[in-house]
Image (cartoon, rainbow, N blue to C red; front, top):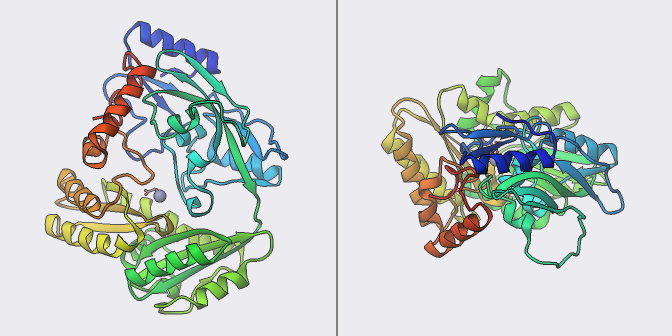
Length: 411
Ligand code: MLT
Ligand code: ZN
């Protein structure tokens, strides 16, 4: 494991590894879920932990330059201290780092409002696989001077180079927040409501979906009681944020939704809000407490979500009747997390079945977690031969010896 202190040292590491034909796995917070930052065959781990500087917030330009090793929580705190905010948030905020989030084009909870990482990166500094330093950090909103290197490196999962810093877009800080949990009679009703909120509630920051079986498991795991609103076949956690209190707007929007089964649980305090969010964010850990989890992260068109859920549950029932299935996700983005855990689970068979359903429904086999090692063999089912040939051509150009994360992304 090498821990370079600055971009010059990163370039020296890459050049030395290239000279000695040694592969490199860049590693940030190691919170990824597809094995993309894990060495598998004796690669050198290039830790970004020491590249953790967060620069001064540019209030006029609404940008900040952050080192790859800065955690999301530190970036968020720096933005907050300057009266602004960062547009991406996710449960792993205390550990996930800027470099890893750029390299995986992380999504999370607020994509519905601000987009994923790719939409935040205005400038990038990186060392490519051939040792070349690229640096264009000015962070201008208008800058039509050639290929979009931030766009290319976002989602490249360490296969083209090591991201060392990024200039990130900041967003206004909407301090007035309204949060509600709403129960629905069916998946279809919840999905229709999610779509209505996305198009009809301007201040919408997040709209997350959960189910009665998952919530019961989370409540038992945390040792907490569930609010009555969450005792429904499908449940949305909805959050609106604005400069002025959005509670009335949220209440109006909720009142116009069809298929609600009980009074919504509305957060009256920061503690209430944390309790509601904990029920959502603890889903992954509640699943992990049951054993080794087969994790899938898929998107389908919004209208196909009920079909996806029905078919996934049926497939798991057939393949591993004693297993537990947890479905949850970012419904506004069409993104479902499928977690399967328990006795008799053959991960290959489950992945095969679920991803085949997703492809049939016109979806993506990876919504926000990336391809990594775990989904690599599925890439040819998800992307055309032409796409993959272009990926390979880019890889060859920027990493001619194939030393950058060689077990990741490309089949
Ligand atoms: C989440 O939304 O909770 C994350 O993507 C993590 C996960 O699915 O395990
Ligand atoms: Zn997620």
